[in-house]
Image (tube, rainbow, N blue to C red; front, side, top):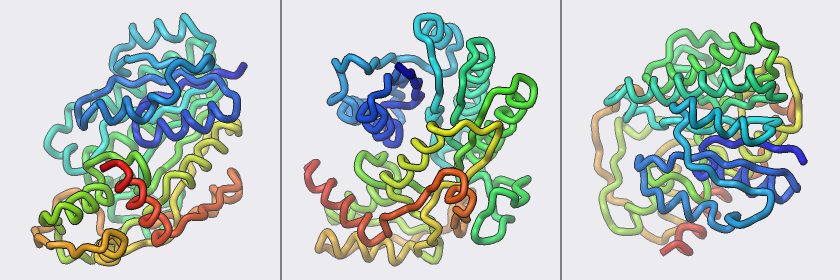
Length: 316
């Protein structure tokens, strides 16, 4: 039975991927360190339905610890890796760039070293739209010049891509780097905009809006992202960088209005100065994903917010 190691497998994106691969009859090893960046109990809830399944194993491990990681590789024959574990968040990376370097670069390098040693057949690296910075044209294309990311987080993700290319070139590891664009949906991290705004509006608390509210994001629903990642797992490229987004830039004010409509409540807006490191707009050119992965996002922002708010209400 094919075995896939998913790092960050108890998180928002990882737990959905675990669910899908298990449904398809794959064997999954979920690695997560349950970092207190947000409540670890939420991660346990994400994966508790899979605990005890014969083809699922949960291992608590920090990707910075190469010795503990290697013990996993020695015990299991790992065919594929989906590397989702990372320290996320643009603004937090400005406050503690060293931590981001340790987790996002050192952790990735540890996994690449072990992939080389144990001859992993396919390595999927979760990158980010943050690598594009502010110099890329809209929509963002994989061939754009991205030499100037504007946050430590974006820089670590770009560094991860470069390390991946180096290991592919030297050791012929098949690697796909997926640049994910603002993923949202059930199980979303509490610090991310849609979940954070929904909770604040629901409680009648102020919603912080940085800048004039004109910023735009390519919000991509979780089921579409998971479909794209799963397609990449099923392929075997030499080395590719591929955007996964919805290819539609949604304004912040419009996003807030959708949450208001679905909650039936008005937002109390707190206008704040622009934040360093925030990109004014993101939007993915997904033509490469359509060609190589048969990727076809189906959930627009109106339906996606409705689905998310429905899930949110069930958690209360």
